[in-house]
Length: 102
Image (tube, rainbow, N blue to C red; front, side, top):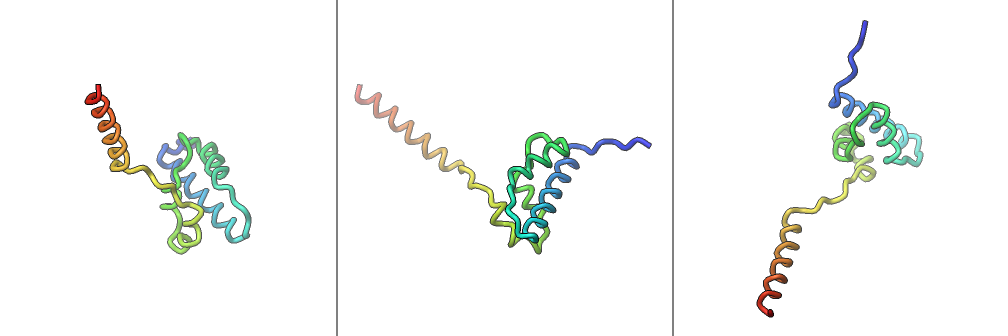
């Protein structure tokens, strides 16, 4: 009997749950855990395109473990559209001022 390889979505989910399982085992054993190494290891093992995102790993964590693992899985803040548009408006003001002085 031939078993088909898991789809990309299934492989991604398997990678996320394996990372969470290792994180929980590491916390219980009070070991130092390198999250980036785990992400790379399971990304390669399940042949996932790229590495699993922190947000996806956090969503795979069981509710009773979310408080303990949230610090390790905290994602960096993402630049908002308002911050980008603020920079662009300043650049536009500078170029207008240059035209007026010439």
